[in-house]
Length: 143
View 1: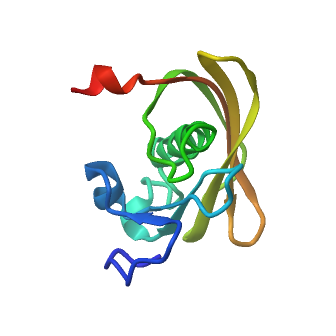
View 2: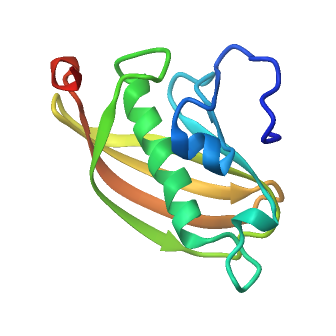
View 3: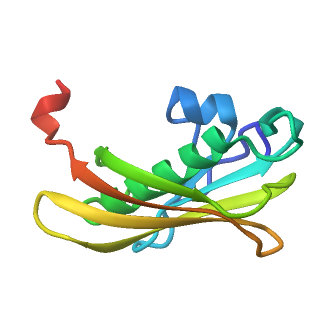
């Protein structure tokens, strides 16, 4: 998705946070079970080796997991969730092109959710995975 914001499409969230605006990713909540983060990787996202910077990969995975957690309680995907812990595994080179991080709830209860995510290049290459523990933020804590 280009960094310039196209006309809003239902279920796609553009530019909601500073990080999202800075990196240029789009949050996709159209699938009510799996939050997704989509980034068109350009030279601005690469490390000195010419592949996607690991911190950006981890950011996409973390946001996909948090959005997936949010979808369990809010169909807009905007209910805030905190990352309690997250482990990331880097498996392949993140080359320029479209990357999509997709989260999946794997377990949990009323207070904590266990969520995993995969980051894939548009050609199908698995670039990174993550597993984490996420906690819903009570709305009264936000004010």
